[in-house]
Length: 185
Image (cartoon, rainbow, N blue to C red; front, side, top):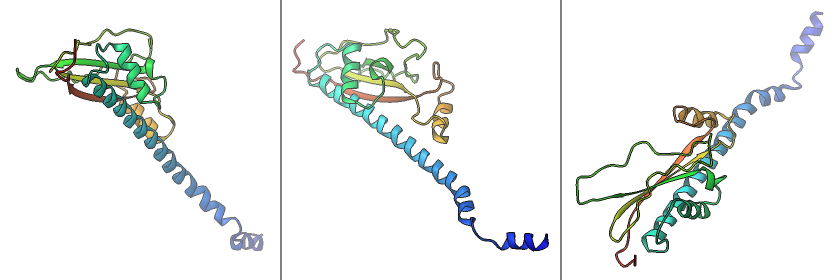
């Protein structure tokens, strides 16, 4: 029995697989977090791009009378990688007068209630006019690409206090513009 035990302890076959079993989960976890972070960043960048393109079109008069459906369609067409964008995107368009006492935008951003994706929230869509300072905020609810990864769970937990958060996180983009004075109303 003693020689069998000594022979077993001296045998080095399979030691590489022990290292792989110990190291692989750590590196695979890093890979998953990197992938989730990349998907999150790409979606945030595309939402920002969609808002910027839409703000530019309003500012120069391509979109003359913006309404919720038109603005959501424009943002979603520019931000193509956002899943179920038309139904998941909520927008606010508010006017501010920079010449009077400044009134900041509400700290709470309105996002879609995922329990009722087809609800119309009314919200604030002020008509734009020449030389008016306007703010456009967009919020979209997104499911993490890999919800079981550490980063996916962190995104979900960070939004745990939000109403209708569930298993999602919110991406928010804001744009400001002044309507050019040459636009015909």
